[in-house]
Image (cartoon, rainbow, N blue to C red; front, top):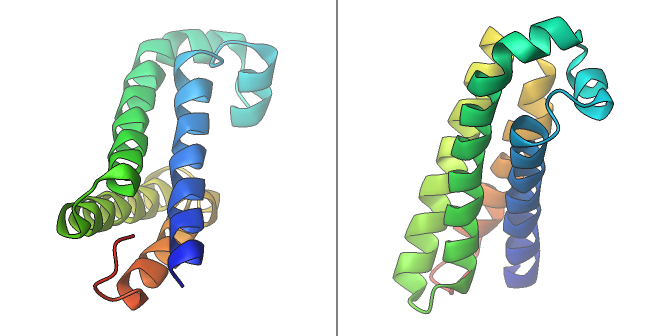
Length: 125
């Protein structure tokens, strides 16, 4: 369970690094426009807001990575659980306010990761 837990938390962190890259660096590129199904005009208007979202996603990824490398099991688990709950809540809100698919892209992987973290008991994640 411990290996699965670490792998799933790592995947959620990677997903958020991907979001960061899309929102901060690729937003107005053809790849970003196609990913978010936007015109260049719309993307340009929202560019700073997207970069801000990307920054928040970097904080979530950093928190998860810090939890994975923390030496203290209590600190590691606390940080990971907190960040995963934040990811789940953000995904639920995004699904409600923007697009239902966000629930599957963002919240579901975090929910699976959280489940394995909780089931791993008191072991260091």
